[in-house]
Length: 349
Ligand code: ATP
Ligand code: MG
Image 1 (cartoon, rainbow, N blue to C red):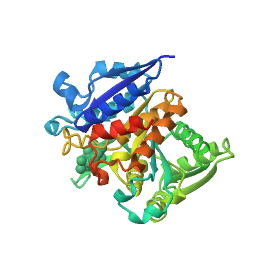
Image 2: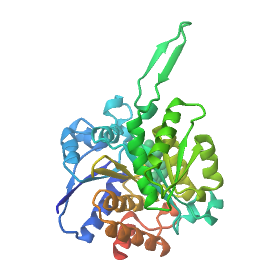
Image 3: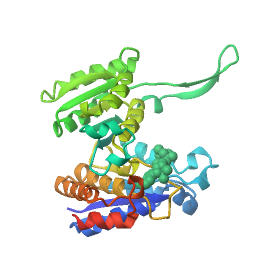
Image 4: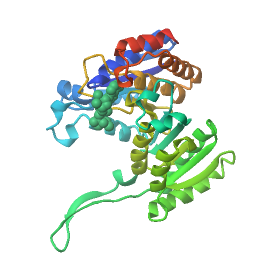
């Protein structure tokens, strides 16, 4: 079978870390894998006048998976919102129906020194946040208006329909089945109607997964618990807004931003895989960015879009070995360059 992978490096360190992911893919030498580059972000704006050109979107739509570096370019700061580099990833999410965002946060050897919460070192943290990505307050009607008394008022409507909740719930339960079999659904059902619906639908879906242990937590408590005892979580299932906040919190429970990968999945096989960090203009072009988040995103691609758990595990083990061998980038207190880290992973495949 032939699989096409779109490589969208984007801006800043996206370009350097994508080069390492590509090197790894070529070293794996997998039959039937074709790689195709396309421009996005500030790079695409400067070349083609738009952060997500039609040609790039077409390539993405015709691929089996998208590897995405990072977008963000300070030279575009004064552009209209719809021309900013960040629109590239937002456009891909909505155009491709990428409704499920998966962010694993696992403590690995080598991360300890960089964990912002040193107390966590003693905990076995291995959680997966499953965040809904196409609904909620981010996509509801929004605007500015004036009140009767002449005050400016901003509003954003929060809504979910039951189908949106159901499809993300299935993703969460299936993920839990492949892990420790525990799912914690996070909402604010004591206050919000959307959350009451969320909870009802999650309970309904749970009936199809009797092997998964379901619990519910209010989002404020979840934030506290994540700092207090992050080791208690397996899969966390939550909406777009709560997931946005909790997934950043989860990532910092384990450490360096340069190590954390993510997947954004659609109803079908197509997915987009990217590091959780941005284009890091402050360190771009210096070969000091850590490429491991990008490389671990590549592993997620093999798992979720290419149905190749064997290669996914092989990449993850090579990364773990690289860290255990103390080959660390600057973000982890080491001296290894971007390409040295990429080479070290390939050597350990
Ligand atoms: P965005 O809005 O696109 O998420 P951001 O403002 O959150 O971007 P990042 O680009 O993620 O910022 O960078 C935040 C900090 O983390 C910067 O100091 C950057 O140098 C550092 N950083 C990000 N990614 C890496 C990496 N792969 N290796 C080392 N340092 C990194
Ligand atoms: Mg950020």
